[in-house]
Image (cartoon, helix red, strand yellow):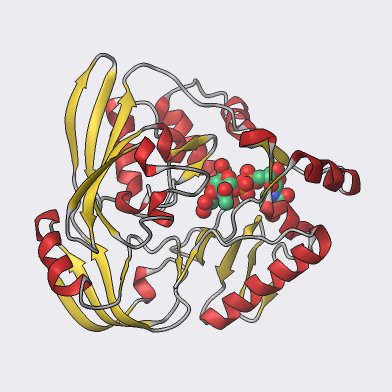
Length: 336
Ligand code: EPU
């Protein structure tokens, strides 16, 4: 492990917020986690930080930022048309996706290009282009911070929902995830429910292969989403709101072009990006913060934005969307 005092977190959050943490603890192996829990995390305020791609730091942190820096992808076994892999928390998510594509394991290709680390992926059940992490996750290994005990949670026990899991609810901030297990298919199959994806493949006249799907996903992401290495951002800032069927009918009679997807229990999931655009916020900038010109759901740091500037834009969006649609947007990003 490495412990650093007074660390600037600018390079540890894709939003590029310049805040300072009292201590920064880099964890170099899963074996040292019990020691770290007992000697540091049970004694001080802490925050578990993966790739920092889903966190908005709003002020200096008076505690320990804990960052897993151990990586590696282990093939546990391959039989019966399935492969099981065990992946360390500090592995880059996209490395895992590329590993699966090289070995012809099906299931993660639509999740190409998502920034962040594997250990954080179960927390918000990352998802894109018709696929969610929960579709291939087998189990999660780690330690409870309050007790120091090792745990293993199966997929069902993780209670996954839309950008949600037990790690954001009952066990919030109490789990140091060390390894994530995936069950992938060795048998050719694709999820092509996202219309934009099949469209790009057709336009390019590309055959349906793992590599082509992955590259088309990357193309779509590049056109819609700002590259965090160039323009600071944390991906979707808000969740897509889920409303009852009756509420949807009322809204669509006022706004006939409203985009909606079926959600569990007969409900409808609206597009927060469209609501924000209709509220006049697409590509709008206030000071150094604003929304992305190609995707209003992504708030961006145009350079040197302070947390207050980002929060001002976020609050204004929530107010304007609420005024127009009577819907209160919920943050997707973790605000610290
Ligand atoms: N839309 C607009 N205006 C906008 C943005 C979107 O009208 O400014 C419309 C689009 O035209 C489209 C619909 O909204 O009809 C949905 O847009 P898009 O397909 O871009 O996806 P999204 O619902 O905005 C979600 C995820 C993304 C994920 C994409 C693709 C959430 C909060 N976001 O965005 O995930 O990549 O679907 O599957 O669910 C993330 O979580 O950080 C993230 C980027």
